[in-house]
Length: 89
Image (cartoon, rainbow, N blue to C red; front, side, top):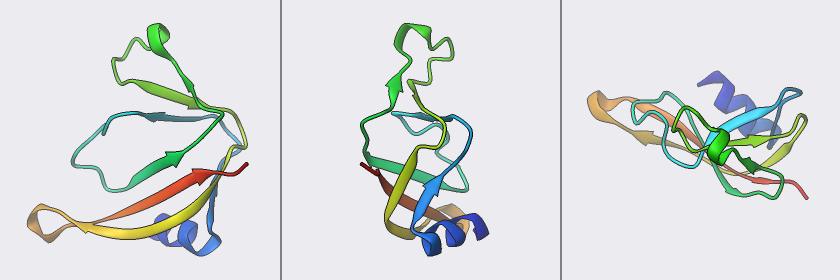
């Protein structure tokens, strides 16, 4: 939860490493979810994705602007932070 709060307060999500994500929900029981609403630099791995996870790779230092942060209530009253972002242009 601290990570989600920090990202929400900064208003950006970025990393100096490459950023892997999926076009599907990887784990429906996750503890954090980042939803990329719009991007331009992500590369779909396609036939090179041997995991079947429909992975998308973003280059190092890609910066995403946070547009919305909220929590989603799951089973057993578990609160999961959701961060919606768009890639900075």
